[in-house]
Image (cartoon, rainbow, N blue to C red; front, top):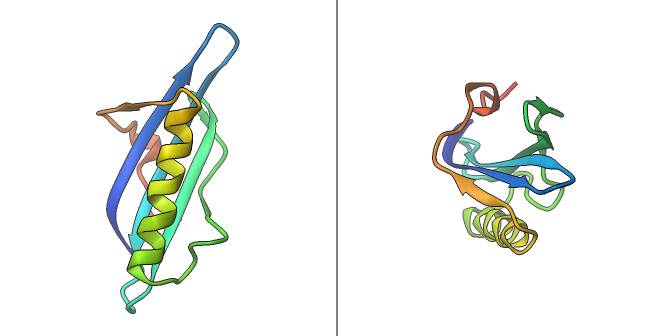
Length: 92
């Protein structure tokens, strides 16, 4: 599995401090997946594959990736340029 794109987003309000990380993965066998990790900033919950983007075509995976990103934008998440080391997707 190879990460081809990864985005780290944060949402900080008066009541919460959350993060959401999305990774677009080339599975190496012609299929693609989208992994995500979310939780309180500094306390991630662990990576999971998105149920609609497990071993799908590249176009389908990119569609889910973009959809997740737009959804988080609508909910006030802001992209951060630096991804914390503990949130870099390693495939584990």
